[in-house]
Structure formats: C-alpha cells, structure tokens
Image 1 (tube, rainbow, N blue to C red):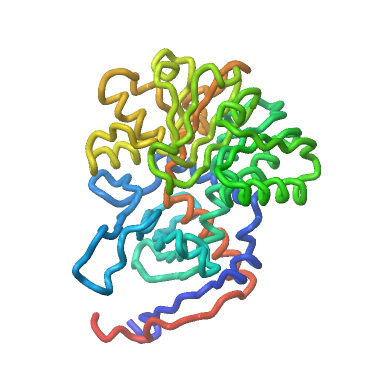
Image 2: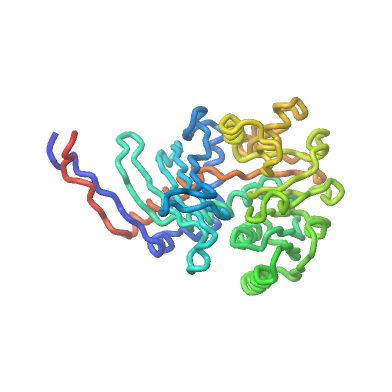
Length: 378
C-alpha cells in the first residue's frame, strides 16, 4: 500500500460554517428527523451500552472534594458523551460531547458547549469535528415537530408552552411549520425576564400568532390547548417539575415532553392517554443502568416502571418510528390524546450533523486538519 493511502485528514467546522451549510434550516431538519426515526423503527442503528441503546455516558461532580482543582456539583453541571451509528443513506458514526454548567450564562456563554465528531464507520477515521450547539438545538426542536406531523390534529389553533426558554422558542418555530394555523400561544414560566423575552420573541418572529397570553399556572397553560410543549430546566429540583392532570387535557391534544414532568397515571393505564416514545429501548437501558426509577419525571422512564410492574401493557407504549413506518396506526380519532416522551437520541445529532457536514463539503467550508500522512504506530 502506498504511503498516500494512509493519510488521514478531517474538517473542522465552526459555528459560522455550519450556519452557512444550513444548520438552521428548520424545515429540512424536521424532514431529516422523520427519516432517522424510520431507521430507528427498522433497527438500522447502534448505540452504546450493554443493550446497545444507551443515551450515553454521564459524569457529574461531588458536593465536596479534598482536591482543590476538582469542580463541585451545581445545577445542571455535568459532562455527557453520546455516541451512535446510524445506517441508511447516512452510514455514519458520531459522538456528541459536551459540558454543562448553568454558571456559564454569567460569562455570556450558553449553559452547554457542544461538539460533534463524525467518523467513517469502517475504519474509525475522523471525518469532521464540528460546532454542535445549533445542531443539537435544531434537532431538539425538530423532533417534537415530527410528533406533531404524525400525532397532532390537523387543525391546531392553540398551543400551550410550559418553559419559556430557548428550547421552546425553537420548538414553537417548528410547530408553526407543521401547523401554520396556530393563532394563540399560552405561556407559563417561572420568571418575568424569561416570560417577557418569550412574548417579545413570538411577536417579533411570528406575526400570524394573534394572541400571546402569559398564564400563572400549568392548568391554564394546558386547558383549551390542542398542543402543549413542556420544556423546563431541572434546576429547581423534582418538586418544581410540571404536573398534568386528567381533567386539564383537551380531547385530541398532543403533549410533547422533551423535559421532566409528572402526569396522572390512571389515564395511561386505562388507555385514555396514548403513550409514544422516541425510542423505548433507550428508557429500558436507563432502567438497566440505574434500576427502578420511582419518581424521576421522565415520561418514558415512568412508563417503563409501569410496564415492569404490570400496570401498563408493553404494547401500550409505541415508538414514533413504528407509527411513521405504518406498523402502528397512530391517531385513529380526532379525540385521541397523545403524550410524546422525548429523551434525546444521539442518532438525531448524527443524522443532522451528517447532512450539514456533507453540504459544507459541497460548499468548500471549514478548515482541513491533518491527523497524519503515515501513522507512527500501525
């Protein structure tokens, strides 16, 4: 083999690079998320962990430490490494790596700083190292929009927003692409600053929304809504997680939950509320890693507990990919009520990152970096 055959180079893509390559194209991202759900439903993917469905490796810090340089525990302070392989036309391995610290905001930085590495699946050679905050943000918003595409009523008029942060800003943008008839947004938050920012954002970006109502309670944010997004931070602890009661939810509503919340269990058990997950085996993998969840607040984890305890039939929980593939009928009535648990899957980052990377290569973007011409050890 010639020396030139051993050369390995990869491309570094900055945030401006990925923006130019289309990372903020929400409509395209929604389509890509739908496509990767088909691959999940067909089983053409691989993740880490014993059962090959792990969300990723999690590292946090202690409350106290005898080591002066070791960071200490804080709100949402953690590191995560999320790796996966996605097949189909993507045929890509990737890992999203990030650190998270709420204190970053005092420095003018986002809470989490993310990068994505893409690797050739056969050799493991790196193809790209890319800024991933926008990759992650847009795929996070696009996933509930895929849920809306397949689970929401066609004539959605009123949306409830619980958590007026960045996630629900991009999520509302995605919702409006799938259901442009939305006229009213009701928003519940914890602080005046974030609520004012959200109201200003809606008025500025979505003139078709006629009414933006700030409400005081979760009940007000849910009653009368065709569609609800619950996307709050966990900094206040489990006692602050949003609650959803049976009597608040309108017939035909879709509740999207990309963050922790609690809901009455009986409607799930008696079939009044339909359970949809992004990837049920991922929640099972969480269960296998940490045991019985008790009260954790993540809907998918709660459903796994209920299935394990014999209170909920396993067939009552359906992956969205199976609905998209037509293996489950999905909505059969305008009155069906759906809850969509969204835990976050690295195949989403890999799929959207791959699309953005390939477009960047077409446009000649990024900086080429050399790993070696010939490896010193081979």
